Image (cartoon, rainbow, N blue to C red; front, side):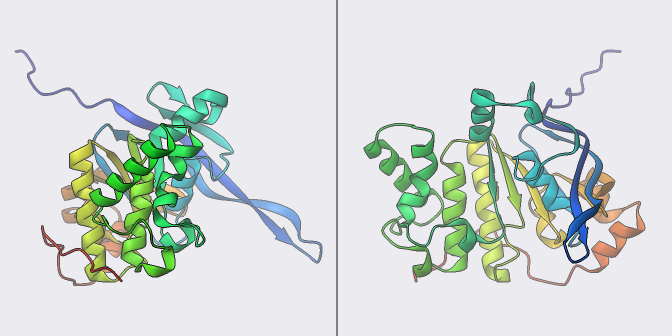
Length: 281
């Protein structure tokens, strides 16, 4: 009998045995006396076009995984493969190409934006860094990106003139400037009010559908992850303890730790399909 089931999507990102450690210092001279593994032999795959949630309590190592992927945390050992390329061995033009295809959205939008730069200049900054187009082309594209995230008339403002949710929209627009294939979102809603969280979640879902993005969504909040992700990986003390589809993790978790995370989810209104965009400050 011929198997007509669809073949599984090839992974866009494959992590094997990743370990990331940080020094432990002690004494008056703060000498390094040991190393603590924040990420310990983590292996994950993300299929092209899917949304994978990486969840765990604070200190579980989930953000360090995201930072190691983009090179902000140095890996001790392991492999990170993007497509056919080994990320940890990438140098020069190969590394530059990888950085164009993978972008990151951080938890604190205020810390991601230069307070002295106008919003439009912050969005076009990665285009200038990669020498893409003329200055006029870059400014036009920055305006289009701001319009796409719901901020069509904000380009001339400074970060302090925007609300937290608006600043996060700017950060998302800037992350999209280089047309990435993979977007790593590290707690992108945790610093926002619940009503604004719903708006950012809906925005990310819309952008994923429109642009064909792959998402790695890092969060401690399963109530948010369940609305964004196709699969969920649960992380505890630097290790992956459980991986499954959204339905498997939310309705039939195998691990006690996962059940405790689910029990800690507060009751809250679910994001609506059409949430109003914040009014300009």
